[in-house]
Amino acid sequence: MKRVAVYCGSATPEDLRYMELAREVGDTLARRGIGVVYGGARIGLMGAVAYAALAAGGEVIGVIPEALVGAEVANPDCTELRVVKGMHERKLAFTQLSDGFLTLPGGVGTMDELWEAVSWAQLGYHAKPVGLLNAFGFYDGLLAFNRHMAEVGFVRAQHRGIIIAEHELDLLLTRMIAHEPVEAICRIDTDDL
Image (spheres, rainbow, N blue to C red):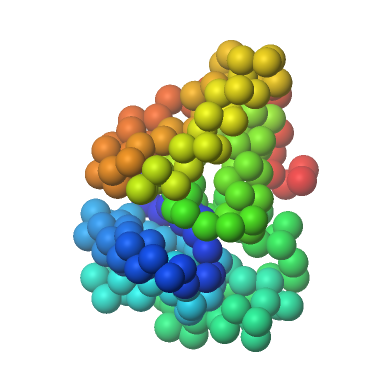
C-alpha cells in the first residue's frame, strides 16, 4: 500500500485518547512509507493525523469540498491540497488516490465514507481493503450491527469480510496489506460513477 485514505472526524472529542490515536496513526503511516489521503481539514482528528504524518516526513494529500474550505479550516500545510466541487467528488478522489481505506473513530461523515467504501467494494468499483480501527471498542456496536445484517441476509456471504476490523493499528495494517479482494456483484469502473 502506497497510500491509504484515512476516514475520521473533524471534531476534537473531550476524551483526548482519540486525538492521541489519530497522531499515532499519522506517525505510523508515515514511518511505514504509506501516504495519507484525508479530508483536508487542519482541525480535530483529521488535523492530528495530517500533522503527525507530516512531522514524520510523510506524504499528506487533503481533499476538501469548496463549501467546507472555510468551515473545516482547510489545511494549507498538506503536501497537496485538492479542493473539489462536492462530497461525491471528495469520496471519488479518496478511492482513486488510495490503495485502501482506514477508518478511525468519527461521526456521521466518517460513517458515510466507511459505508460507501464497503458498498463500492460489494459493487466492484474497487477491490481495496477497508480497514476499521476499533480502538477503545468504539465500533463494537457497528460491528455487531454488520453481523446482524449478514445473519438476516442483507449482506451476502462473500461480502461479510469486507470490513477488516482490529483494535490494534499494526495488526490492522498487516491484515490490510494481506487483503484478498472479495467477489464483487459486478465490476464497474469509477469513471462510471
